[in-house]
Length: 190
Image (cartoon, rainbow, N blue to C red; front, side, top):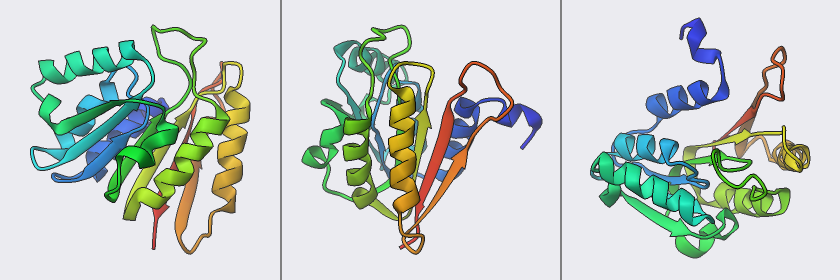
C-alpha cells in the first residue's frame, strides 16, 4: 500500500474488497445508495457469483440499477427494496462478504438515514449469515444527527462478540477534521 491508499475510508474499503472478494463469492450490500460499491461487488464476484443489495429508497435502487445495466452487471445482482433489518427474510445462504455504508444517501434526502435500531438488528443477522473466514465492513458516518448513537451501538455490539468466533477491528482517522467516518471490520473465525 502507498500513502494514497489510506487517505479515507472509501479508498480503504475498495482496496479490501478488491483483495478479498473472489470469483463465485456470495456477497451483500446492505445499503446500495448510489450503487458504487454494488458495481464493484458485481465485477468482483464474476459470472458465477451473486450480489444481494438492499435499500429503502426508490431513487437509490434506480441509480444502482442504471449503473449495473451500464456495466452489463445487472444479472449478477438481486436488488431488494426493504430495510437491511430484514435481510434474513430474503437471504438464507451463507455469505462471504457483507458491506454497510451507513448514514444518508449522498445527493439524496438527508432526513432519511440509517439508525441504530435497524442497523443493530441487521448486523446481528449478518453475523449469523457470514461464512467462516467471511468479512463484514461497516463505514459509519457520525456528522449527522443520530450518527454517534448508531456508532456507539455498533461498538457496543462488536465489543461483546466472542473473540473465539469473531475478530473485530476499528479504523479511526484520529487527525482528520469534520467527523471523518469510521470503518469497522469483522471477520468470522469459526
